[in-house]
Length: 394
Image 1 (cartoon, one colour):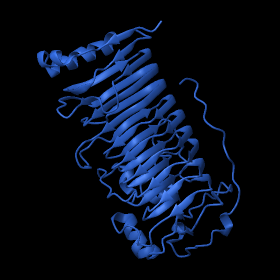
Image 2 (cartoon, rainbow, N blue to C red; image 1 turned 90 degrees about the vertical axis):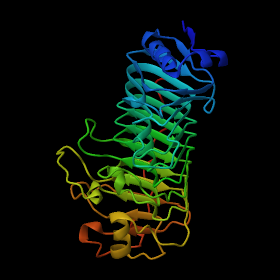
Image 3 (cartoon, one colour; image 1 turned 30 degrees about the vertical axis):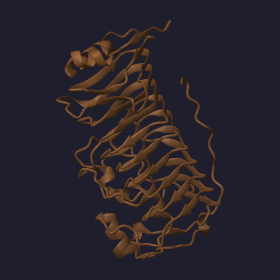
Image 4 (tube, rainbow, N blue to C red; image 1 turned 135 degrees about the horizontal axis):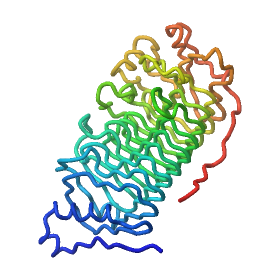
């Protein structure tokens, strides 16, 4: 049986109890909560001087009065790396509240089977800054992840990030003023749909990276999204892999496997609508012998792509590449492929089919950009479509 715990504070109580005391009361609730309980957060803005943590629990709901009605502010956070951290748990639901200005990540969830973010906002309220935390919503090493109706704003890495996880749905959500709006990394069976990503440096990323416990992801479906105007200057701290993402990137598939990108609106991203590249484009050394740095089987079809007639970014190393090596001028292609082939794998790297106003370039990066080709015909084909993700628990 599920019991309700009402963490209730009326206006009179707020004036009588200090904010640190409120924080201690809530953290105590998170420690003492019984499996199957619901914790209700009241309406109001509450200052949290330290991290909130939940560990080793099952079938817990934490619910506020509404996304913009219950606000946990970590602006004056003195202890802890995250705003909220949930670990080693099962079947956890976070519903109807906001987490602001955490010292590090806003909400980190690790090793949880069954995590729901529903109508959650995670944000940094000032201007985008490299001093902001890396991730707003950050499930990692999880299974059965649902992110639905959420907002992520101001992350110096990725607003909505799912890493090293399996069975994932990200839908009906908004991400803006992040370096990366939405990122799926080293994860398998992900559906990313009906989202809006705008005014990030890069809208939606699907990455496989080396030196991680889970080596490779597979089958990310990215569809029915509105990915537009992702032209914000990149403000990631130096050394981060996303610091290499050039402003003006709609979607970036980096060493991804079995990705399907379809029926998206990809509009006014000045550097590329969709880029499909190997890890070699990062110019970082590869020490992980089990890592496959090449993209495979990217099926890109039925997308609507538009862009203004303007030059790509001139910022950073990628900007210099566009200016001095690619020399596209204002005729920048919607789809860019680095052309770096895995000689041991002869499967089709890209299949392009029925994209509206599609333009393309193989930039021949493996040969110093000597033989850039704008011919998309070798890549016109029907690839493999994948089944919808089914969560084992929601």
